[in-house]
Image: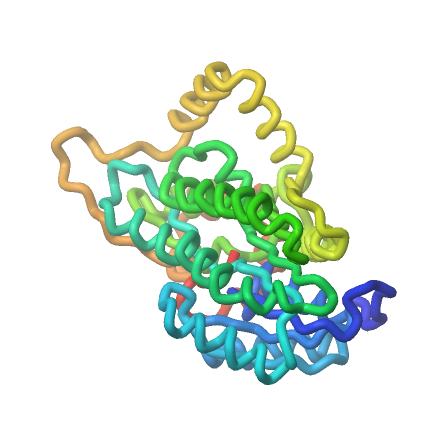
Length: 336
């Protein structure tokens, strides 16, 4: 990552990024720092935050602040936003990026998986949006709120149903807030990335036949052409925030899929059904479902021959991304 700052209207603005300690959140924070923003990283794990801050300073030459906060806890979020605004003399940019990824057939999970996804992804975005909007409205530069959705929120993705439901709610939140804050000096940008090489497969959680689920997910998430370079994605997201775009869908595949779903939803759903059949099987009817999730990093350590064969097809770039973007550390999965 280049150390040179971009000429932009973001110079000197204060920015807060949730899920900022690794992956996409880390890269978004670095891009904002390169543009001269005073950046605060927010995440649940203090050690990850420290490493993330060190990574950004090493790659950009710019120090950043860190705050430990669980975005699911509304009072904690409100206190974090208030302290950050007080320290920085206000808030100009807020990016809600924190989330979890759970990969499993629905038959192998229970309602708690949906509760967890909604609490972290949707409620986390809602908490940070509601807490920060008063400060963003007061920004002399005009506040910018960014909500990280997903192409998985534009249509349901098999074996990612809790994630898709929560991201769909984030998309609705972004569109609604954009409409309701019009004329209030705040812009709301909702971003729907497709597959990106962030190394998130090591932090994602896998159920059902976890080794096979890990194999297909990590391979596709890192496959060239299908997935997008994470640094290029972060640059495009920051540019969209800078230009106050209402919506951004990243990767040609994601845009094509979103378009196809919009113009031919029935045909798209049938195609989605074929994709679901190609994925690892659900538990047999009458069998006891194992609702336990295993983190990708733990599966990676014990991956068998099938997983390795599939992973080597497409995951090498994603494995490299995991090493580069602070994804190989232990801790709760809080960023995409």
